[in-house]
Length: 175
Image 1 (cartoon, one colour):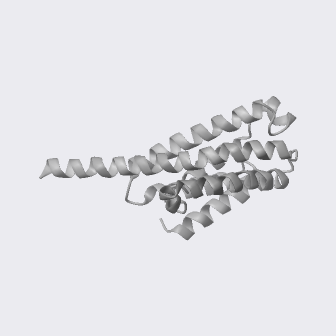
Image 2 (cartoon, helix red, strand yellow):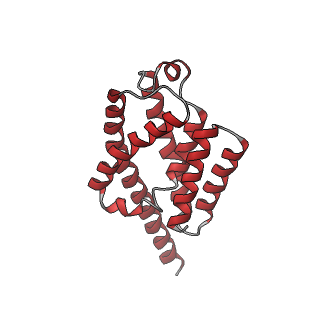
């Protein structure tokens, strides 16, 4: 999958999910984005694992943060929105395409995550007419993303390397 297609697909899904929530249009965009990501030839098993593991961890973290009141009263009572869960699925498609460079530069990934993660939440909260995030909430998100970003990238790199090793061993056994 080309880097620019991956970035554009993610941005389209981000805007649709944040502005429209779970709508037919946003769900179709998510399905197309994920389908396009999975349709490329390399690392199919690793991609499936990334699409399962990363959202599970992300949704778990967001659920805990919502429970602790980081996102405001409404989310504390009702839990995180479905559109945010779908956004985690689409985010997972970035890790081995447009964010791949960061897999070998985890320190920079942590710094960018600490800035980019809270910025995305802040913008999403503004656009979705949610409660404005407090400075304390943004600081908590910065720490969470400081940890999650390099962790996800390391996981992605490891899964793809493991799959490459497995496929090389299978090729040796067949010859």
